[in-house]
Image (cartoon, rainbow, N blue to C red):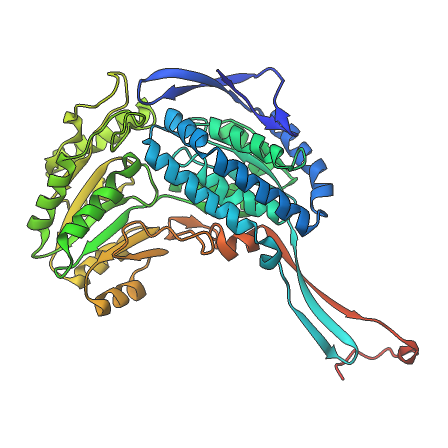
Length: 495
């Protein structure tokens, strides 16, 4: 199967200079070949977006909303097809893929409210006969560079809002699981979006650099690892672009002694091993405030024992990792954790998977007695590896979380409202859950972290997303009548 670009309202027909292989992670077999864009291919996509933008920026809010409502209906009706595509290329189980589609739908629904979201302010008679009002106008061509772990949801964090604001878009999805982007582009066309408003180019670093350097690309939205996010931010801003680059994470879940340990154990397993840990909001560290560590570890291990790892199309709880290379990387961290002296309570290397022998299997892994100097603690592993760090007090737990270079998400489990309120106030993290292990905001709030988890100062979707994809303008107007005639060279004053 050939997976190609989608430019100017139709699939690419040119000959690819380079291609990459796309795998089914549950079998390890090649399922398709994806075209990899050159800088010239990116130029063609951007040029199509520029042409489409001349009309789309002036499209009425009523027309934009009509397209978005129609797109929402198409995605909702075909959600099973999109989820199956995600599972076939990423590996996450079907129920998880369906949840990803649902969260993407919520962003589309939020964007359908663009007439209210773009409403400006108006002040009458700021000076005699003078009114002032504000406008928010589109940027132009915007680029979105999305990761492999959410091939539908992350593009939908940005694209519907960007389009609703009157921009045109070039999306560069991950080459590991590229097919979802093509479906979204085709469905946008069915919904009535004009050709060239939403374009998809597949590729690797060459395509990314071409978007970052292109003079007609006005902004870049990126989600991925911290080193690449920093690179995207620095290169994009050096080229004069507005950039929001969401990076990596090391999310801590603090469990206080008064917490319900059964609920905390459920949450740790769900948040640690969902999507095989390939989530930037996954819980990767459980901070157990003594004396609860032994009981909590016992409960987590018991729940892991009941999980079934295997092909996401077979009703399993956890699927494979996305590629063979990523499996090797995550496995190396398991080996490093054991070598550093952490206790492997559950070793995922021993899993017997319900799937083909060639699949990229690693079962849920639980380490206890992890210390902050170990690589399994310091590094973003992005796999099904959960580390338990034991501390003596709330203050020690807070200091541990705040010392981490990442600041994406965190959670606290407690029945003490005062402790929870203190934690949400004191912790240096962008998204906080109180007895909620994965505190991903709803569409009308904004998603993003602090510290090395975000480069730029604007989070995704919500009000911040609308502001990112628009520029503010203030208009001061006076409609003259004959009484305003005459010459006066003095500095204008308010009277």
